[in-house]
Length: 92
Image (tube, rainbow, N blue to C red):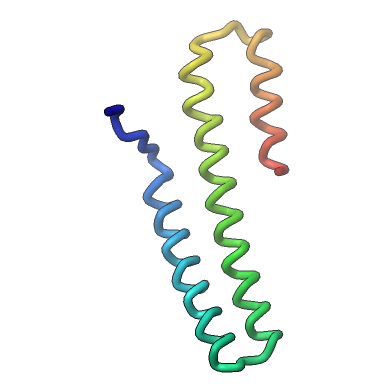
């Protein structure tokens, strides 16, 4: 069995996803209660935003830590494409 793969950002990601889970449960309740579509859509947007941000944080953290760990210490000129890749992923 491999060791747990835990980063400093994981507790914050877990907290965000748990909050999104609560919002999602609320959306289901709202639909079952016949709440307005606008209210439901607003809650769904909050869920979607929370999940998107959690995913972005996880991917960026992986690039910042795991990729660097694999590459090791490279001369500055060889790191440039990797550093550019990491910067551009923030726009995804």
